[in-house]
Length: 267
Image (cartoon, rainbow, N blue to C red; front, side, top):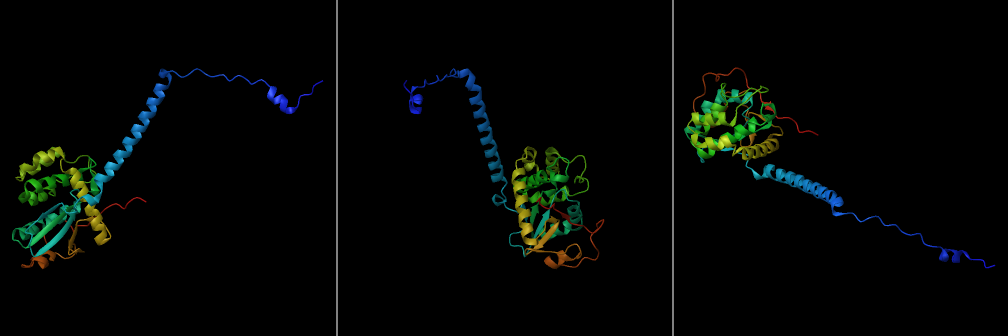
């Protein structure tokens, strides 16, 4: 009797046949492949969109000054930080806007306006501050001599929307305001929103600048030589800067304007 060794048993064992499944047809794998391509394309599209949005909204691309009015060689320069949705800014303009305009006209003062947009969140449309700033930028670019008139009108009681109200102003309404002050040349750009993105970028740059200079962000804020002016408690602050007779009475206003703080960043 022949005894097979363990090795011999392995060699002599028949190999089990390997069954191959049918090859997938084009119609079977095509949907899966196309689905993968679509997912990858969408992922790339989302990544590119986020990258472009971040690139476009980067404050470094924009100047923090939306508009500068007055002679370049004016002896005094102030920086005014406002938000077109800010009620305290409206009170500030009601109290000092006329004096500021007169000092600019007399060549004694240059004002650099920084229009912020952190109160977008309090507007019915969700972007009123940015659109209003875009309208102001359009006026400054197309009819610079009408900027102060437009700026004043935007803060008037019959124009400025209330925070938290159910409506604000459309682009068409903003364009009509520009036309009413003689800045009709800017109307088309205002209606199309041509300058909103630039104004929003300028607003973000201004917020960053104000935070760096004062360690806080609130409106209205007035700076001279990068230092805050205490305009809330000193109604002669402008006369001290540009000279001229002191006021005999406090400018008319309903109350002492209180600054509106920007929300703290999340996290």
